[in-house]
Image (tube, rainbow, N blue to C red; front, side):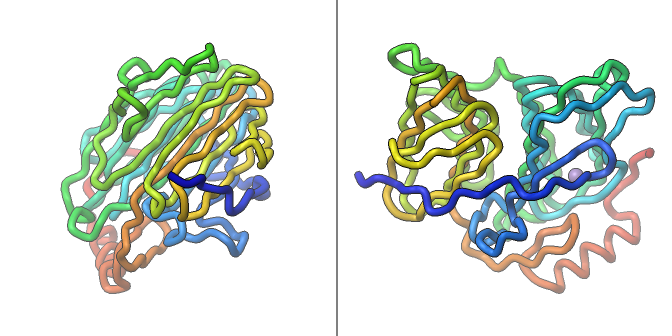
Length: 293
Ligand code: MN
């Protein structure tokens, strides 16, 4: 097997607010001319709320009711708590270490807010939101919701007390992820002690990247990737190593490319322009259901 090298290291882009509750760096599709939805498909959007202190607020901050169709939204909580409700009846609160995996597919309305008590107390907030694309045959399947508590995730202790790898989706060694996915997707949290390292192996053609959540890491003993930076790998070679320069948490993503056209506008990601127009028409006609503000 050959080494998979880093193709690109991306500095956190200038943050912007999504609603009033998420202060995010948008890495995918990004405005950097290097990445777009197709390049990282099935990871078609990645917003990263780097660690940010929200002062106490009586009214929970967040994003009000909005629709999605054609993909899944995955929220990974690293700090703080977030509450979610959708028009198909899915919902709940996730806290540190938990993940919510919402399959919008044919369409839902949802809202995303800071959890009430977190909001009242204030505190550090750190989240990743990913949009995971669906293949054409599944874009209009029924919506569903998977609440993935940290304890449900497969975990692998690394040799030499290097740390552990947590499996949100896919697998790592003998451990399996809790999330059910439509196409092959790996989503792993590597929690490394200073000086510890982990090896990863994915098919050469998979779109692969990592985001440094905490600490600083060195990939393949060559590329330094600092906190909050995003590294994209070449679509060649299979294996790479991540070594922690200090205690580190790294989100590792790899997925089989979905080789289908993308037609995206706002909250809808379909295959054709006609399907996008249909999505707006269905939304305007109330076909995404009802959700109270
Ligand atoms: Mn949303």
